[in-house]
Length: 198
Image (tube, rainbow, N blue to C red):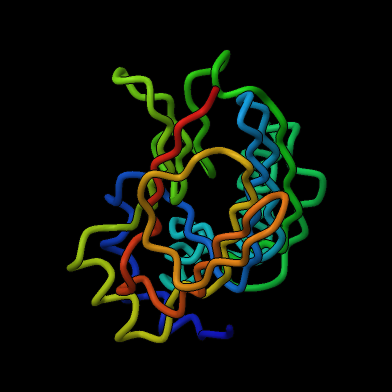
């Protein structure tokens, strides 16, 4: 995905989004065992909307842009699960991320940030475990898409737990059943799954 500083100018209002990072061109995988152990892996791009906006204003010197690039890189790298954070262009970073935990112990997991997530795994009060997708409000989605930015990727969930409900587009049965979402736009239905863990 490539977009110009002119495009970025139209993203200025997006700074007030709840959260400031958006994923694109990604592959994301949850591997969830019925005992609660899970691993989450993400490979793809993450765009910093505030950085994109700063570049679009055209008011920063090259040195200031480089400083901002480093600031957002360090912000992502505060989470040690980011194994790679490499700046590409116009607010976009190529990243690799991997995290392991047990959801019965940690209660919840969010990616990218708790206030800027596009995926959440959470233990509910009723005892069920749920995967929830997330996205910006519709007016921001419409603005981003109209200016050439959209989020595309593939989400896969591998699990041997009992799945009570899901909206995956493809299911492949096996020792661990694979549920697949091919997400071609932020306007697509959000991934959703409810599991019963033991």
